[in-house]
Length: 440
Image (cartoon, rainbow, N blue to C red; front, side, top):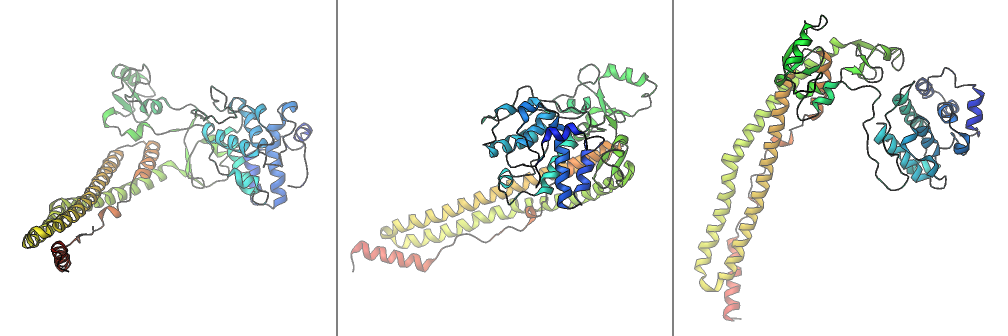
């Protein structure tokens, strides 16, 4: 970046900070030339930082990212409790950048998209990557939303910060309750026994009576909580930014959005109704169920084959070698007893190695079998969920947990890892006899 701009003078002038949406500025700038990109970075950084006390932040230059102060000041502008800015030094840029990126990742759920070492080196900074990273702050802290700060400030020393649960909206009670060992009633904290598909909440026997009496909820579908898949209880059914119910699905960003999202971050994006996406996910789930069933059957056959056939072959191969060694060794009497013991140990060790490999492969396939079975059963239960949003979020969670079992059904090597060379053994025995009797 070329020109030097004083942050506080720029903000006081108010030339560009009025009525600018930082996220939109970044999006527009990503398709423009470098000069426009540079100006945009200055704009979206200067506004929040310019509101800070100039006595403490006089050395912050939004055009220079290599010292890390601009990133730290941006975090401090919104969440002053997350880091102790007064302890930072311009002479330690790597430390500043690490603090900023770690705090953003651990407390603001902003992924670490940049490498501090690349920013410090003058030839490596990628302005588009920096702008994309800065825009993440505005996605997390846009408008008047306040992020939940940590109880204890993050020290600039070597301490590991304690991660807090930072969100921009209230989590549904059923979500937090489902994370505990026993799901509690949303109304009275007693153990829940029922679940409302429309409300996406759980409640006890007494509170169900109250729920069913309300005019707005008496027609809701209430089912036994034990029949509800755990993934459904963890589903997020409302926009955490605007605390509004999801209404559409953004095909450009690939996630559910509310009415307010349409006029802000998803303006002019391609949208579709939730029902369409839910139907697509259900079709995909049906396909997944079929594929998992086929994989489970293949793994089951392979496990049975390993137990009934391959396991016995291991003992058979070993026993055959042991018998040959024993019969040959008997002919050599006392002179070859030492060689006999060596060969026996070699075969037994090889057998143990192959047995260990077999047990490892068997355990691995049984583990994959259990995981596939669990996913299969969860998907089957999920197909009974009529609530579209719950279905989408639950399915996407299950989809990430599905394992590829291609390697689990591959044919194992069944050739023995060991054998017995009679000629070599006889020669060794002869040599032992000759040496033992000093015949040479």
